[in-house]
Image 1 (cartoon, rainbow, N blue to C red):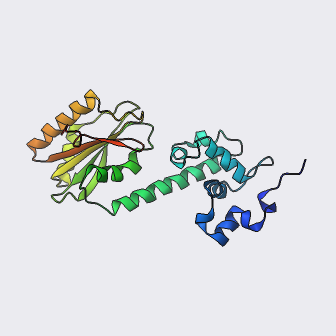
Image 2: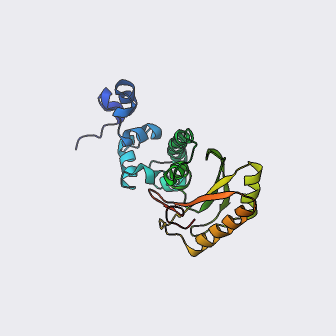
Image 3: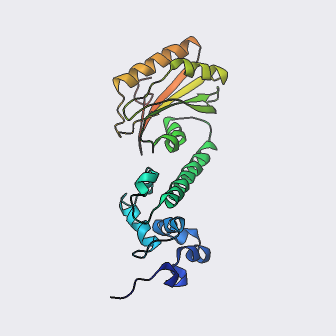
Length: 229
């Protein structure tokens, strides 16, 4: 049986780092990019093969890979804490880059704009978070703030904190957002009740609640689009 080749034995153009230098970053596969993060494999497999094994575990889906924790990645033989941290950090940078691109478009005109703004923040979370977007009269985003964090199925929200933040930021309108880690985007009775309470509280302060979005991995539910606001 022929001896297994290490990356240093490969043709120069096939080594991930050298391939990136010579052919550019777009020439590399996802596995090759992850192999660069890993740095080295083991005596039984190269870094690229290890990277392929990790990707196969999430159906070659980088979005799902971004949900893996450090402990999840360390379950793979050849991945220690340092390598797992490198992978998690790189994917987090990618998520933040996407968010930075979205933040350049700060005016909200439709529910899709809200989804584009909040999806990078909420879609990967294993728990529920409740956020509020604060807007001026032109529907420009003044700020966004996390108001509550909970478990898989629910989160507690203090309406007074929402109103205080809106006043502090001189917002004339707000948009509510939270995620459903279970993937079920249907608004629950609790979601509908909470929304009505916030709308009623905001009316007293002459603040408009323009929408409430439930964010999923690829889709969303808009209270406004569905006629619930």
